[in-house]
Amino acid sequence: MKKKILPRLSNLLCLSSAFLLAGCDWDTLNPKGVIGIQEKSLILTATYAMLLVVVPVIVLTLLFAWQYRQSNTNAEYLPKWSHSNKIEVVIWVVPSLIILFLAVLTYQTCISLDPYRPIDEEANVKPIHVDVVALDWKWLFVYPDEGIATVNQMAFPVNTPVEFRITSDSVMNSFFIPQLGSMVYAMAGMQTQLHLSSNDVGNYAGESANFSGRGFSDMRFRALAMSNDDYAAWVQKVKASSEQLDSSNYPKLAAPSEANPVEYFSHAEPGLFDGIVAKYNNGMVMDKSTGKMMHVQSAMSDMNMKE
Image (cartoon, rainbow, N blue to C red):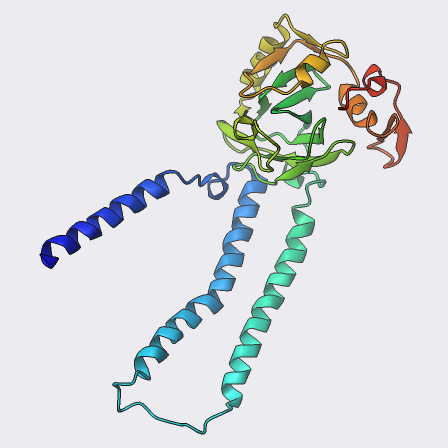
């Protein structure tokens, strides 16, 4: 009976493991942009460094348990043993060196992967500017240079830096495109920055990585990395929409909705992003060029849309 049951249990365990792993998303470890590639390298390097401690400890624990088991009468028995300088050196020096290595690595990458830092490798390419607003439960993308806006879909050319300004007109959220890297929080009345790019044409998943209420599970978007010609065609497609976004119809868009479909707006009111930020700060917003607060005259900043 046991000969029949054990193989079946083994097969069932393998099958169940396959089903469990089938639901895993490995986008973070399959990066498509320069920032994502560097972050993957950081994750793997830090993991390997920590395994230098974890693996030997596990192996030695099993080895000692086997070597000094009660039935092994050949094992050396030292009931009065209490100290070893060699062991003390190993258990203190090795972890200390690993911690020092991780500290230096973290310090360097905190500078090189600063979300506010422009992407050096593509400094000669004109960046695309995108303003991101987290709403309940959808993402609004405003392209100030093109004068357009979209919901739950954004696009940009490959090998082109994308400069994001990010805020929220609701509770705190977190903007994240796993295959491109860098998760950044979106908070009402505050604006943060993020610089990303894609090396390959693709359709990448974007999401909110911070629980924000009932519709959180459907708060997803698609990030489309396109060739220059396809991106220009996409912009024209958005501009062909009959919908426009301004202070009069923005409250309807900002109202809570679940599983919101993709929407295009052929015109977005200038200063829309600044107005959303300013309405939480008595009409004040951060000037990107000077780093100082300035007053914004905008219909958006004067509207009382907070609950």
